[in-house]
Image 1: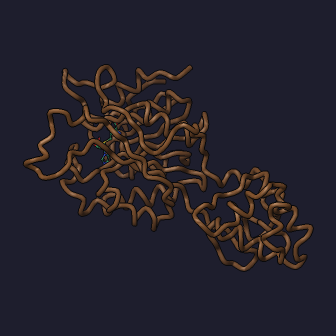
Image 2 (image 1 turned 180 degrees about the vertical axis):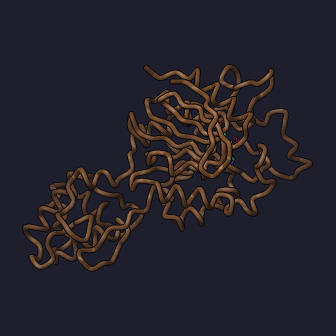
Image 3 (image 1 turned 180 degrees about the horizontal axis):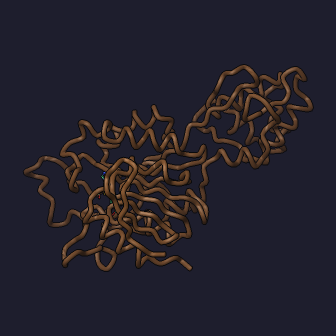
Length: 344
Ligand SMILES: C[S@@+](CC[C@H](N)C(=O)[O-])C[C@H]1O[C@@H](n2cnc3c(N)ncnc32)[C@H](O)[C@@H]1O
């Protein structure tokens, strides 16, 4: 079914929905809709910037964190341990909101820079008068969930990195045998059990081997080791992998994204004029979604604008859920989504 339906939301406000089995776009404040959407695999947030860029965007960044607070808390409450958040913002806007994201358990991974190129400012830079460099970039910051796990039956919850080490140490075995236990040359000692910034989580297969080794060679009093709950058995490879964010990024991509601002046929027009000043390039949004979710996964776009992440969800075979508070933009996005195509 493809339809724009008018409905009355539970908070009493009248709203409208565009839905076609692949995406749902709600007219209204995203905060009123998070509870109704399936848990997200990836959230693409491109909301207020504090630059007065669209109706409702504050003129400066004071108050931006308060504006985001109910969204950030709802994302944290509804996310899976494996959910990725891509947070688009101005530099100072992100700097202002980051502490709140961090407090809500969103763990910083990488700040990516969208470089729109010199063409973006050509003939339009008033640097001498303004006494500042013109901006040809925007930020898109990757976050994942900070996962806490129980240390044996102690009731203590530890972040994943500390938990891995503490669970192994609880077994009484030396860290030097973790490579042998996981059947790897040195990844265990150099990466999975390090305390430094080179740390990353082991794959499920390795975690399974480590648990097996600890259970058969470690202190019998503390068994089973590497449990995800205070009771029960050690984590299986599959359970462990479900805690880790999806990531399929090709090796030649990095955190600087050279791409011109949206123009030409991709730029959506309304009565001959640009429909939304903040329309993001479909290919950039498509890539972030493809890297951090699987086909059939759930994509949230809380601040839809023209619905670029929803269109990218359709294109990549994911299911999209979004909201747009401003009626003219909602209509533009609904029209765009009606015509959106999959990648086959
Ligand atoms: C930066 S634009 C998004 C542009 C979008 N990424 C695109 O490619 O078209 C932010 C949008 O969020 C909408 N918005 C702001 N606050 C909102 C809220 N609480 N709920 C839903 N939409 C909101 C604004 O009306 C605006 O259209």
